[in-house]
Image (cartoon, rainbow, N blue to C red; front, top):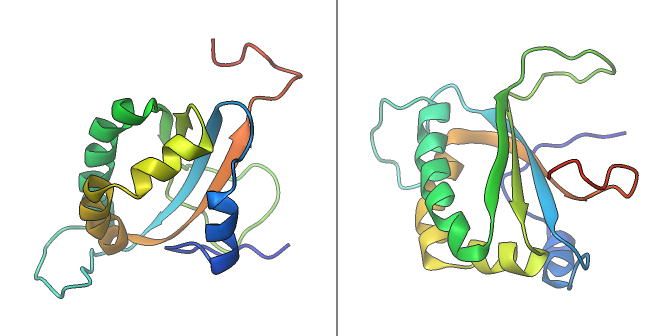
Length: 143
């Protein structure tokens, strides 16, 4: 298995994102790896760490989520890898719930999200962003 952190989707992933998606709410699992120091695409001077820059983005998104029916389910620091192996652990995991892939897509196409995302790009070395749906084996896990 190859694991590759990224800052943006591939052309194929963009096409898949535009497809209707599951006919139920989704949870996006975000595996986040921060830059040591934030680096803004416009070259601005900053003393922010990557995590601090990303937190600016995350707060903006948290304020947008209710407008799209979304909510933050969990955010936590990665502290230990119990099973498996990767070259380097992610720094943080965030799980965000949306009523549908369509609603998430609407949010990431909004002017507010695009404006905030400059801090995401400045702060992240890369990430995995994994769409999940509620397992039928655990139907009440989030209730």
